[in-house]
Structure formats: C-alpha cells, structure tokens
Figure (cartoon, helix red, strand yellow):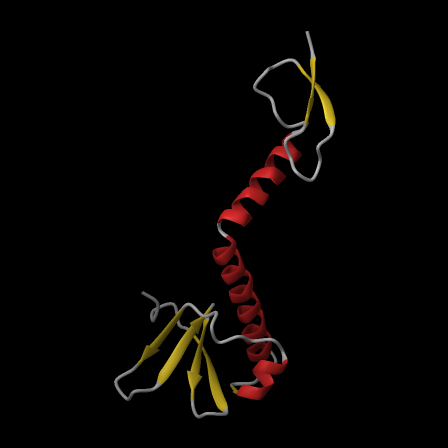
Length: 125
C-alpha cells in the first residue's frame, strides 16, 4: 500500500506516494539538493572560503592571461580580489612574501604593487 508523505527537502515539501517506508524524498534530485543544503549549512565557512578562493584564482588568471605580470593593489581590490582567501603565504630567503593562488604566485613587491608569476610544475610540492 502506498503512503502519502511530504518530501523532506526544505525547498520542496511536495506530497508524494511512497511504497518504501524509508523513502523521505520525492526524487533523487531532491535528495541531492537536501544533502547539499545540509552540507552548506554545516560547512558554511569552508564553502565561503572555497568560493572566494575560486574568485581570486579567476581574477589572477584573467590578469595574467591579458599579459600583465605586475598589478596594483588598488586594481586587485577594485575587481574583487581578497588577499584573505589564498592557499598559503610564504617568505623566501630574501624575506619576499608570496601567495599561492591556483597556478600562480602573487608576489608582494610593495605596499601598492604585486607581481604575478606562473608556477612551474617542478616548483609545486
């Protein structure tokens, strides 16, 4: 006998007929969406970090692809780059600060300027 129940996806809540008493979603799409929502809530900080990091990678890639190897800090800020969302901040032997962003190094030159270099595969750990 089929039972009527509400889909447990908070965005759906559709009434559906179920034959299996363990079925709580009306479709596989609703199940996946509900799990994504749950993950996003439980891991909100990580999800935000990943989104901001990906945006930074796109910005640096776009600048470098357009032939620029130096960029002003104000330019980065204007296009939405946020230095808080980078993979690592390191110093070399000469105390030069650089950040790993995707396939690039963003190298701190001064208070107002950065250099961008593509990372060679041999340099990666």
